[in-house]
Length: 143
Image (cartoon, rainbow, N blue to C red; front, side, top):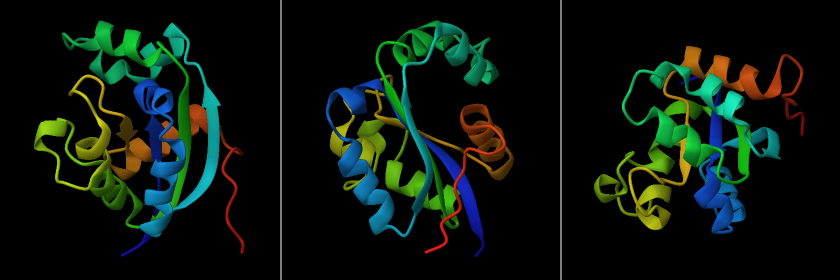
C-alpha cells in the first residue's frame, strides 16, 4: 500500500443537508487526512471545465446545472490507498446499489444527486486536485 492523494467533493445536496462534518468524520475515522479544503460556488465555466470528460454524455447539461445550484465543499484527502478508500466510503454511484453504511446509501436521494464525488484513479486525482488547489494549495500534514 502507498500513501496517495485524492480529490473529494461534497456536492450541493450534501452541503444543503449539513453533512460536511459527518462526511469529514467518516474520512478521518477511515484514516484519511484532509490536506486541503475550500467551500465555493462553482461557476458554469468551472463546472463545465471540471466535468469536460462528460461533455458528450446526455447527462452533462443536468450535471453542470446541479453542480452550480449551490455551494460545494472541495477537499484533498491523503492516506494509504486514499483513492480506493474514499471510493469505498462513498459507495456506488447509484445510492440504491450502494452498500449499507456508505455515504451514498445513507444520505443520497438519487443517482443524479448523490452527495459526493471522488477521483477514480491516481492520474485523475492529480488533475482534479490541481484544478481546485493549484500547485501550492495542498498543506502536507507534519504532526
